Image 1 (cartoon, protein in one colour):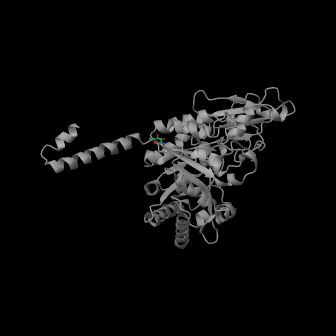
Image 2: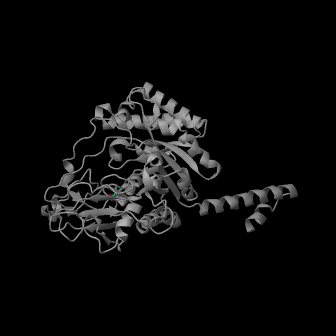
Image 3: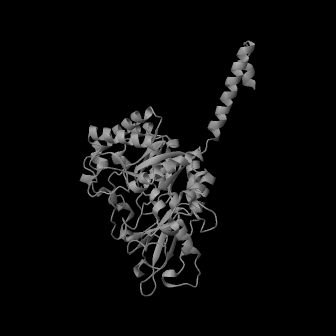
Length: 451
Ligand SMILES: *[C@@H]1O[C@H](CO)[C@@H](O)[C@H](O)[C@H]1NC(C)=O
């Protein structure tokens, strides 16, 4: 009000009204900016719509999540390796059964929601690096044009708000470490010098990807479409992303800051899959804090960086040589744990599948025996649960996982650092039926509550 008086000192009546209006407008704007909270980005894996059994996620099952999300990212579209057009990966569901429209129509009921189509996401399968259309597309102006035009056409035809580039760059190879515990700390850095080259022409591809991002942005401008980037786990941003050129062109970047350790990449060593901070004698890049800091160090504004949080765990088979303490890293594991009863993928357990194994009757034994849970009181690395192998070497299992309480700690980290938000991978792996504790989407809720 003091401001209003000062501004209006030498003003006629009509002018005072104008100035007051301006000042009030300014105050409202200030209020809006200061109360703007971090973003909640929800990935939706459309293949969950056609699963069998309790893991099948229908549109009705999806709806209770949507009040908590500002962005819904529909996964995934792919790239036609011959024409370089963006194409549905599940044409029957996405187009013939009109699922694209069914999803974008949800905006009528949830008007705050922005709905993006995501391309890539490790769902687009091809063999060798030479055949990788995500790379060969970059090298050719005509192919880039084809992709840009087809993406624009699909977004407009199905009324999406934007495109998410979950681009399938070649991934870093896992580092095989023999005799981890015999290595002295001073040789630790030596692990990384031997990293195999994943792309001889990475420097060129980095420049061409930045050009593609510019071309997409230009093409989308007239229709006000948005553009975002999703970094898949183990894609080295240093190799492929020219941050100063790319970040100003995208609305935000979702970091694949999970799956640092997986039973497919590291079948013989089980470990925490998505720690917040660096762990002793581990790859120093395999944690959220390093990934975030890398982008901030390279000129990305903090409010454009979103931290990826999984709604699932990764499981390994423990052998007799894996010991009985459960304390990670666990050596001598034998690859992915058996597929769960709901999601049915070896080595991957959704939160409701994990929760069920923790709640089992303690009297059960063999493959039905309950897992012993070890929480994370220091709030740095995440939870795990295990069942050591029996005298015959059977039924051993180790699972590193996310749960509502650890997801909340990550959300608090995001909030404290002033980052853009949290990206949840994905809604279909959270407990959308409320099987665990009666409440639907407990991981999503606990993140949203902290943002
Ligand atoms: C970020 O920069 C700081 C200060 O230069 C440095 O100590 C740190 O190692 C860098 N972190 C990453 C992840 O690049």
